[in-house]
Image 1 (cartoon, rainbow over the protein chains, first blue to last red):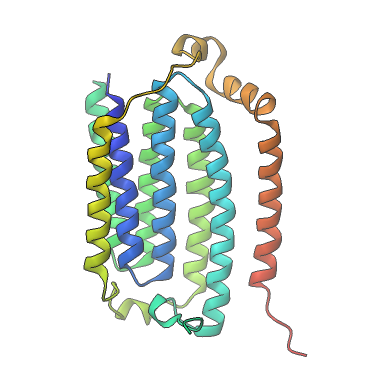
Image 2 (image 1 turned 90 degrees about the vertical axis):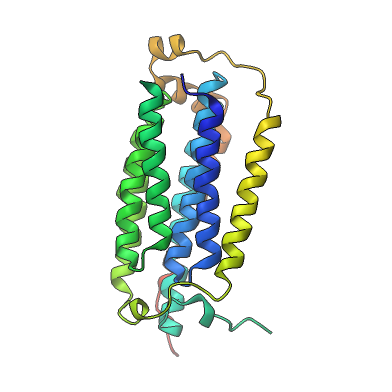
Length: 100
Length: 169
């Protein structure tokens, strides 16, 4: 049987790949996908905990996270469309209108 | 055997997630992400979470990624493909992520699992995963479940309001 730590390590790796992508890319859509990567990484660790600790609550949590991720993706993409309408770019470097 | 399957899934997931954040074309990024979601669903299957594996494919691969594709196709990304793909501060970002990963790796050593629950594999086998999940969801977690429906409603209204063209008076 695969130890729990391997799953946690995989989850951490995917999470921090997402962090690296979020902090380094310029395209706002890729930034958004990095957020989805991070949410998926937490889902992996929660399901692993659920399996190894013989408790279903981890999977319930994943269920809620998936629902919230869907809502978040919808709102984020709506914001991206609104931004693109104003700026005609997806480059985050050019979105500095609120930068005092 | 379990180790081999886990090794394959983990290797592919890490490789694909690196590809997602490094390739230039967002459409390719979405395609790699689609493949990665299928592998994550496979990982859920190895953890006896059939319902979540199905939901992962239906909601993430079927709904969220299609939404991403729609938005990418709505936006004209011809100019975007010509610009540099990273910000000037990308080494800082990658270094920060790497440092955080090392911190998480080191903290894993002092991790002590909590007390075990009662949902053993035998219970899941007797009752099926979906039934156990549903029973807990609709009894213990009924109120959060209702709140989630409200969250989805707010997202629906918010998306319509945000994406609507502003009327010029």
